[in-house]
Image 1 (spheres, rainbow, N blue to C red):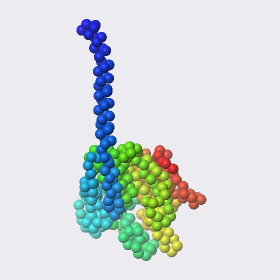
Image 2 (cartoon, helix red, strand yellow; image 1 turned 90 degrees about the horizontal axis):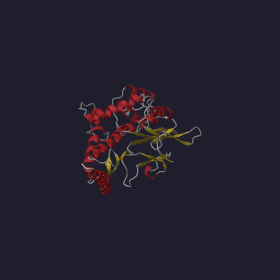
Image 3 (cartoon, rainbow, N blue to C red; image 1 turned 120 degrees about the vertical axis):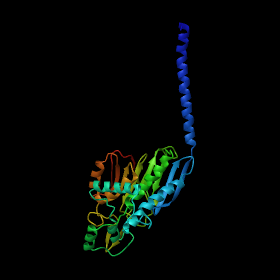
Image 4 (cartoon, rainbow, N blue to C red; image 1 turned 60 degrees about the horizontal axis):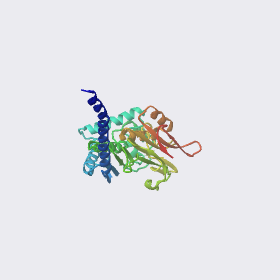
Length: 328
């Protein structure tokens, strides 16, 4: 190759690189524009004796497949469904335990061990005895509580099933290639990507109101959290309680003592990779109380928490994981 041809080729290389780069960016821009045009679907309904809300970016409505997946969860763990696996087990029937049942049971046992028994799916008889389940009888005597502590054969997945349902719905969306979504069931949430406005998903945490008459949907927010690419669940004692004999009984029962918890923690919000775990740990933290809950969170770098409690002066106070993005 003579010098003239070599020089000509050298001058053509930058031009070719420029053309290739330009073509790449044009294609990428067109793909970005096409993605932006894809509509966000929105579904609302009723499941697990509560409401659900799904927002996701996809070309078609996936509600039928989502509902079918949630019905499968309901068929395994619902205490309100007499045909569910857990209902059959609680009646003393011998039933096959599906991979889904085994998965959630294993997660429940994991949280039980990690919280030294503060989370326990056999707590249902104690919950019923105190009037927070399906019965509302007289308060149990100390001997009745002791008896229920010794023999517990009834399973209750209500403190982990909603979170797991969110995980299952998120799996359905992921299987369809959905990259931007928010799944919410009864206040438990899983998010991915960005919202319809192209911004990170942000979820509000309700400010505790010491009244059963307050509507959570109309209540004041304590804060707003960045929940992008995370799962979030909240548990609290401030709305579910009853007063008898001048004493307030919280709905959270300590599985280790058999009695309703009484401590300063009012609300526990947990962010975790899985909503089932966030759900279960939030419940466990309401049993453990502030200091013990903080100790558990410290041992889990993949989780964060936002706690609302009453301080020594009886005032509302907040503690949250240092790396948690909050909007006060």
